[in-house]
Amino acid sequence: MRQKRQAALRLLLVLTLLAASASCLGGSSGRRVLVIMTPWTAEAEKNSFQAVLTAFEARTGITVRASPTRALDQVLRTAVQQREEPDLAVMANPGALRSYAQQGYLVRLDRFQDKETGSRLVDLLKSDYGPPWSLAGEDVNGDPYAVMVKASVKSLVWYAPQRLSAQPPDSWADLVGVGQSIVQRGGTPWCLALADPPNSGWPGTDWIEDILLHRSGANTYTDWVNGKLKWNESEVEEAWRAWDQIVTAPGAIHGGPLTALLTGYGEGAYPLFTAPPGCYLTHGAPVAPDPAAPTEPVPGRDYDFVPFPEFRPTPTPAYEVSGDLVAMFRDSPEAEKFMAFLASQQAQEIWPGRQPESAFSADRAVTTRLASGYATGSVTRRIGELLTSSATLCFDASDSMPSAMAAAFNHAVVDYLNDPTRLRTILAELEKVRADVYPQPTQISVCGP
Image (cartoon, rainbow, N blue to C red; front, side):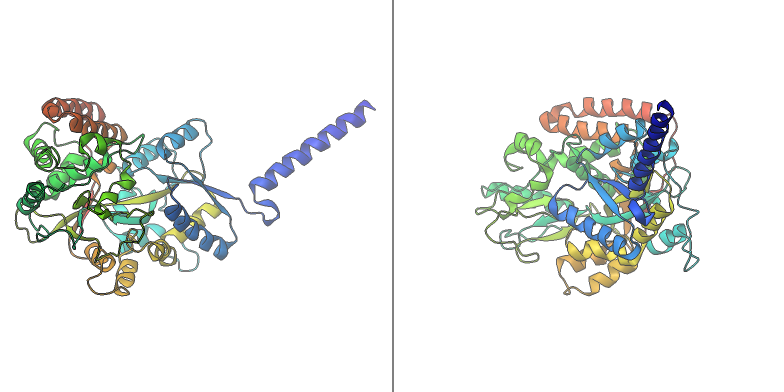
């Protein structure tokens, strides 16, 4: 009887293990269910990415489950430390990607090859995407680890054409002058929203980065990312001083500094569309109108953009860009197929097709084709043309810095808006972080034609 019970227990254990194995492999299909950790919790973004997953599932029969979280960097790091990492994850930024790659957690992409065409994934990324998009997915040694799922432009100034009586600014002096004239008429020129726990402050870093890029050029910008430019050197301090012209004057920002610190970044542009307007200008990637508004604002009529203004004439404009990278933590044939699909033109068209004014492809051919389908002069077409022009594109500086440096930069923006008189102290504190984070300067390329 005892032997029968032991045999029954062994059989039960085997059946339990087989059931668990079948669950992980996706049941009778013999394929694993891939899990990808993402930062997209808002319905529009979540649904757009799900459309990408659905297309992959329809093509391959492989199931991919998205695991969304707003605190992606923190949740992912905990999962990795506990050896419970997902198959794939959207990286918080290239700085985080390089940290995971350096620690040996990520799967390199340079050995992946399309069995049908014989082409390597890394060659596709270099030829169809190019810098800075392909560079953002590489580690400090230039080894490839990620594919860009969508791209955006940050060097944009948005305004309401029917409400801004002055001409849209095309130089920094004009931009400052337009803001001053709005204040003189009793209005508030700027919307600003910095809240995004646990990363509050980053919309302000975008301002500093844009100013430094346009004031000092792409080479200085790159040196800054690589830790070669000290935070208390004149180029960096003068970028902060220039931002001071925008945000610290009385009545310059909607609701004042406290409102800017407490307002979620996704709601930052809402006052642009109220009646009367709460602000007339806002900076950054394409704006998000209030979904609860009685009528949906029309791009080009109710809101439009101009590229971030230059400080001086330049033959080749420069723009700050950003994007979302997907990397592999667990290697498998299914995960490799997903990465190859994500880099394909079929996949790259899905998200921009669903959110054409806020999502673009890093694949130049896809962006060119999609832009040609929109009306000449439309918001979407002009952003697409900007991305595929001969301009210098520089990936978001703080996103490209080591995570500790980026976090300190975010915090510094919050401290500065609380008390602008502390600027030199704040920069000295950032310089201490730089000295710790960069024992040796790096050689990362973040800009490209």
